[in-house]
Length: 469
Image 1 (tube, rainbow, N blue to C red):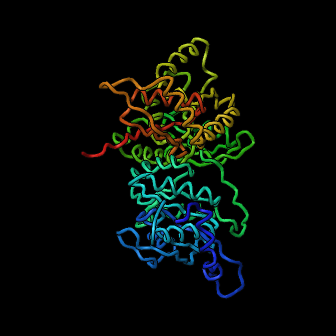
Image 2 (image 1 turned 30 degrees about the vertical axis):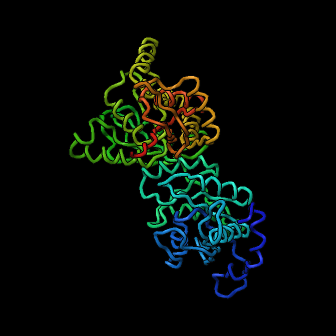
Image 3 (image 1 turned 120 degrees about the vertical axis):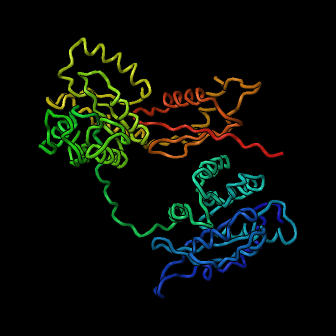
């Protein structure tokens, strides 16, 4: 094979029939040439299976042995009304000889004539030396490249596939070409990478953010809803348990419309409740799951109770952003404020990151401060930290405070990435299991560095699997 990508490509460009390979999918009306997407990767990573998945039919030959595909073959594809040409290629290998060299050069020619490239990697194997060599070739092409982590059949493998960030091609798209998992998200990303945009449509305005008002009975949830919506939207009574069904209402907070959901006060665990209270508990949990952020109301005039703790656990376990609203502040005197601060330090030490607002639904005191708190919690709930910046910070952290030695050895953090948002989820890839205390230390420092106030943060560890002897 030629010594470089630039030297290998030209001799094959004469054979490229772009007009034929970019055939229209329309009904004969004149259209411009369809953009081209090349599918490349080392042998037997599932390129042809992915092509069949994209075009929606078994046309590319697939067999469980490497080297079945040899030439580059073009197929017409369509996704959400947008047409493009997908080009299947043979397995690319560096320093290939004889027929393998010709197959690799055909793949490089496909890259040279494409508008975007899908680089397919076997996620179960991980990044190999051949994959790293292919990355260098793709970078020289200066084409948009989407990294496809193929053969990802479940959520656990999806987390493992995040280690492919180390290839330096950006976000891996976990898919199962055989079963179709993740293929829709991949195709959406393909259309975004192509040079010709889809027909422009008027962007749909985002609906009001959903806010769940939760708390134990008689803390003032319905009173706060009525105050914010400026109408008697929910029945308010001194008898606890007035609200049973979730009550939706649009309210103006800080000059912006929010969709507030008043929920039933929770007395018992869902499994211990019965009758109307049982169904109210189920609906409250469903309202929390459907919301983006929860305002948990606590009665500032009374001690923080076990029911308050249980509700806070329900919200944090649901992964929703959180704002604590200490209601009935008009009933709090100086002595109660002192004891309340001690209670917060003692009873809410599990959630020091929760935003806090002291309000009075009855008088309207400080209810306008809820809007900035909700915005901050939601912004942090949806925050994404760039992988490079995250790893640079984490490297400095573990060097300054390494993991304690266990059994004569200390596990090392090899790589880390943010696996998702809403809430932020981080994965640490390490040489061995990390102590739970050290993971909590990393989470605490992560919050201090990147400001995740108002949102739960999930930090999981993926130890490196040891090779079987």
